[in-house]
Image (cartoon, rainbow, N blue to C red):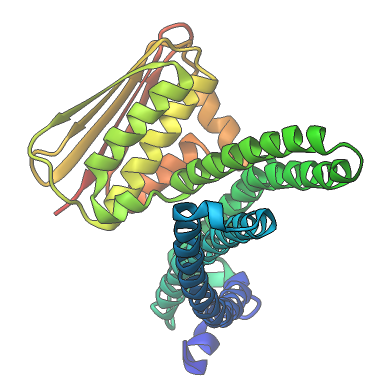
Length: 354
């Protein structure tokens, strides 16, 4: 944004502060991305070295096993120990590299959102602010975007704290227990080590699920429909809630913004049906015929008072049906909530995808 454009905004406008904060955040994100690039390069080089070393040790182990009678017992023990250590180190470094790559991918997406936000701010020029220093339509849009980002950050922070962060804390404690037991009770330590391995595997699976919920990579690679099919199947298995997905029309790729919005809304509605509605069945329909994509999600749960829920959500500024409404309307679409106490809920939305 040029200095002339910034000067055109009303004095004391909160938008100037938001734009400046977003610019600083964008610059910081770019700096972090450069640092991550260096770490990823170093980690990739280390993984390559470990792969080579692991291959060499594996070859030695095979040679030893072919002539095991000629090797001293101590040499056999040391070689197996070296092989195990090399495999463990390689596993850890690959995990670290994957974490760095995932972090970089998420940061890149965050930087992209910030860049779009700054580009929108560039479109606010002289005379667009309302009289008396009030917020213009452009300012209100940006404020809503920023507020949505902050709400999403808070939501993700809570998920991280209750999920992966808590699991890692437990793993550290279990590792310390194993470390102490090796000195006083090796047999018990081996049992605890096996438990630790199972816990690490469980934490890894939970982290993968968390990453999928955060942003399924196949949404970018394969599109909305394959991602929905996988998510609905996984959701049904984990929640035990009978869920059916029906696709009308030929499967096709939609604009990225539409795919993300539709997936997120269906994801949120299914979670609501499982966690709050006490439903036994959910029907999801996606109509891809024509230039307007239609989606409906219907459950047989306890239902709710729509007007009361909307009023309450606006007052508390919480995520949920108000956020869905705003997201769809910003894309030029429509969303309707049909529900009443004891009658289940049906949500219908349409989004132009020309």
